[in-house]
Image 1 (cartoon, rainbow, N blue to C red):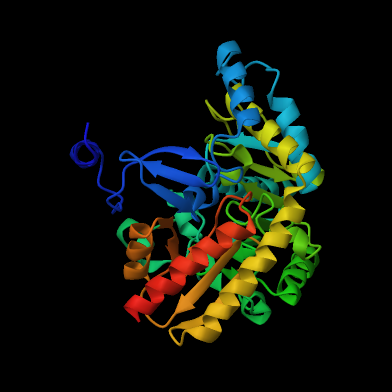
Image 2 (image 1 turned 180 degrees about the vertical axis):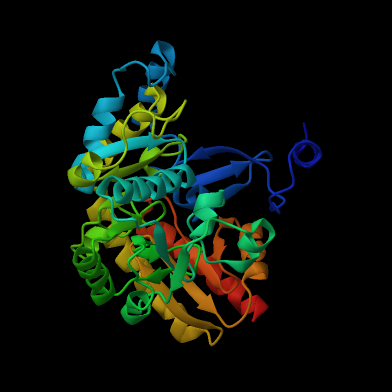
Length: 397
């Protein structure tokens, strides 16, 4: 088939929910992806912060192939050899106590919201409302969308789940003003990805934790995009020394194999979900759990956190140079290998031109270029990215 035939087959047969770029990807190697015509692209999108180990990691591939030959799926009615090991690894790196595996981040958000409601019900508090943040993104299912503050996503599907208030991100007083005796949980991303690469301030994270402790409210941290070493710590909340009551994970925990999870403290687990409250057919399947366990093993052995800190600092330095050089680049945002540059205009045309030049980048809202590459990139790849950005910015602006 030709590239156009692949594209046409997609357009003819799938529900049209994505406006795709006219590129048909075929294979990956290291931090590069190749299209069906053999053109190479430096990947600074990583499948939207998923492929932390890049492409073609033979240790990971060997583990997955071995599990495929043994057992891909059974059900949660039985034990399997991989689930407990993966959960234990996630517990160790997250500092949480109990894990529930899902198939995606959005599913994990749904589970976290249910857990908070069930915890309040068990405690007999009568609480059922949530506080979320403006510029947040937690997913597009009904529950996740209810705590996502994006009018274009929400409006066609209203009424959504009631009892959700939206506070100003990094404004603790705004959060406090929304707290009532019905508030069961506060949900936030320590670093907002989709919302524009917005980092929480230390005093904001600490203040949310203190507020939750004082009021008997659960703190939910959505680490789907900013977790798994992308900030230089295994999870972004660890940058602040703040431990949530519930943590939500997905994307890079499986290195491309579809898997998510929500984890909680022992105290929350003891007072929330019991058999019959929540379930999943595919969640915790042996293949996904092998992906999680092997990914964590490689991350820890190769000290991916230290690598991200080093290369992330270099990326920040080079992006700061762009800010100084180009009037249209207003600021750099983020940390580690979840960074962005905000322009004084929409970034759509820049992204298209970068793709033509062989670099995959994505947006965060309309005016921010989001950079979430595989965590194994080197400084030479940062130079390659910045050279293309400098060239394209010079042509367009």
